[in-house]
Length: 67
Image (cartoon, rainbow, N blue to C red; front, side):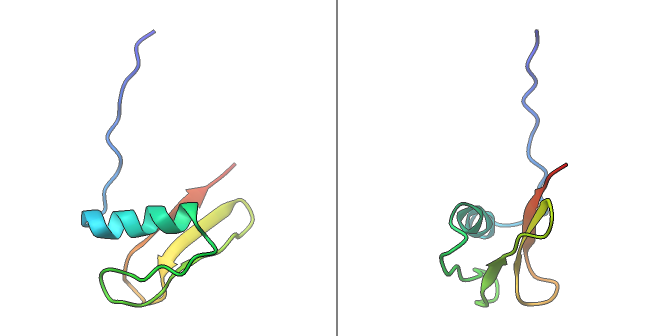
């Protein structure tokens, strides 16, 4: 069996922006400030999905989507 390491999809975020999204994903109860604009990054469970995004429209976002 051959294992292929695929690179993560990148939206062109800086390391600080990606780290802020990852930190919020692992710590949903903590306050996380967006490194791009300074607003709050939110975590919200919606069905089988978890959007993690900055409160500023059009800023950084990420999340998980289940089946």
